[in-house]
Length: 169
Image (cartoon, rainbow, N blue to C red; front, side):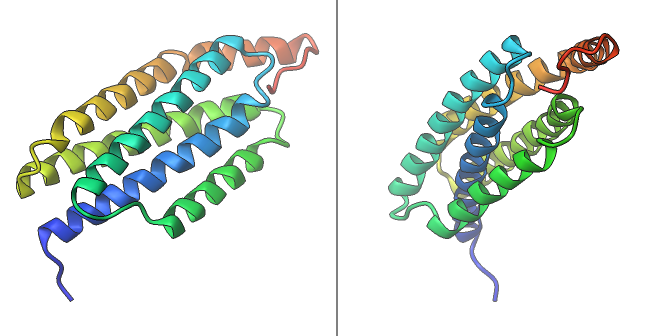
């Protein structure tokens, strides 16, 4: 059964909200283990706060449309965020795998916000556009930050590993 553009937009907002909840869980589990990478830990803590604010923005938009986030989607994505973080935990190169995964995840969020902005424009939700653009900009800054540190993180990990220091996290 076909749904309206507005329905598709609302579904996208709910999905993005669940995605932000997943990000909070994923990053929170990583931060708990990042004792050897303080710069990365600080950035991830900052992005946890941004992700919580982004979820709040999405809730505001959904409320204006007379609906709310999907508790089931939020629960499922939070669970998957925790599981994803746990999958890398036993691996020696956990910090490297998390860096790659975080870089990809940020780009997934960027794509989601770009799509939501296009949908907001299509359905005439002008009030949502500045909020969505603000979230998009935060995701782009975080992706850029991670991207600029991929090589540094890999080399720092390899150097720590080579001299027998705790390297993974």
